[in-house]
Amino acid sequence: MKHLWNCFCRELGLIKESPRYLILLTAGILFSYVFFLTFMHEGQPENLPIAVVDQDGSYLSRRLCHEIDATQGVDVVAVYNSHSEAREAMQRQEIFAFLEIPAGTYSEVLDFKTPHLALYSNNAYLLAGTLSYKTLSTIGKLTSAAVQREVMRKKGYSEDQIMGMIQPIEIDAHLISNPWGSYLPYVLTTMLPGIIGVMALLLTVYLVTNEYKLKTEKIWLSTAGDNMLNALIGKLLPYTCWFTLIGIIGNMVMFGFSHFVCLGSFFALSVALLLFVMAMQAMGVFLAGLIPDQHLAVSVAAIYGMLSFSMSGFSYPVVSMPPALQAISYVFPLRHYYLTYADVAMFGATFTQYWSHLCWLLCFMMAGCIGGLLLNRWAKSNSDDAAIEC
Image (cartoon, rainbow, N blue to C red; front, side, top):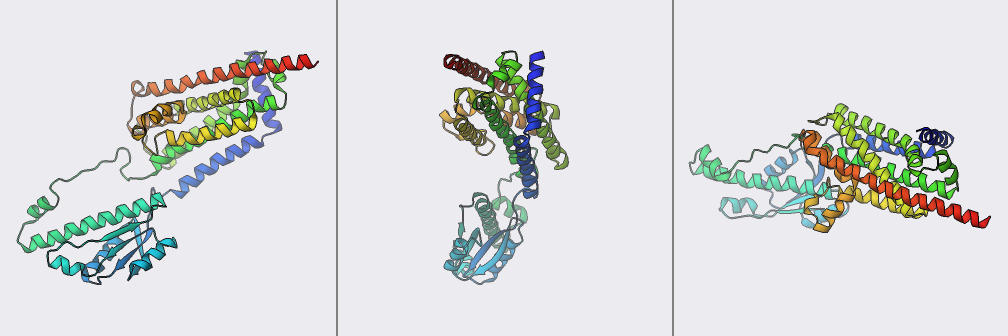
């Protein structure tokens, strides 16, 4: 314990002498929280610019334009007379989608024919294009239902009969723990802790490999009593506490100030966050021991950290990935933190339901132990080389 404490105090002294890396990483994390919580404060994008190509010029087409403009998600910024004008506006990135109403639409409705409305969206901007398409598609379906209702009214059907034919099955949707349909609880509650984990991973790789780069590993190990485990724990413990504290404060902001729903235990989320930070540091130790070159080790750690966002499952479901990728997803700690968050915060699960995810996070400590053995071998190899040179 004495050697561990000495190593801990040595690292605090190094932080005091050169605090710029920790300050920059902390500033990056704080900027991410402020940026995303303010940038996405509405929950999802609203008033996305779209256009309408009205070649019909009838009462129906004007009514349809008003109905589209009244929706919250999109904003009709222009009404064009031709398809080419709308296409050029989309190419100039002035609009994300447009609805084309061909000539003769109203007359075809009156003649009991089937007019066709064309919908174009720019999916180069995935979120904006998808939301614009969804809104216009919904308006198109509602317009079709409204026309059918008016026709049936003229035929003398009652309102109950009309609704039974237009919508025979009514869907009562309930969004679990998110009745507003906001993107914030789905995205930020995993992405922001994920940023903390990536910062912890990169800093761990840099700090450990820097001892060997500066040829100070002998001093480091002697301070820890020539015990690599004490050396690693004493060196990484200050950063473990710091990153965990930032993460807990961030969760307090999200679940308190931003009013994200947390049906389960906040303490359980804090424990999961601590284990997640430790797991990312363990992977950093493993990469540092596996790759002795500092630049290459940091580059590989950056790639691993970025892949963790894709493989965690919060942006794209893991069950829809190929079986090989589903198996690979288990080697990313963010995957298990995300599953713990979903069980605890969104479903209010008890310990018996999420303990396996915590055990997976603890299993990453084995990677840290393997990295420690590799680092110990590198230290002995450097000592032997130095003795031979002498």
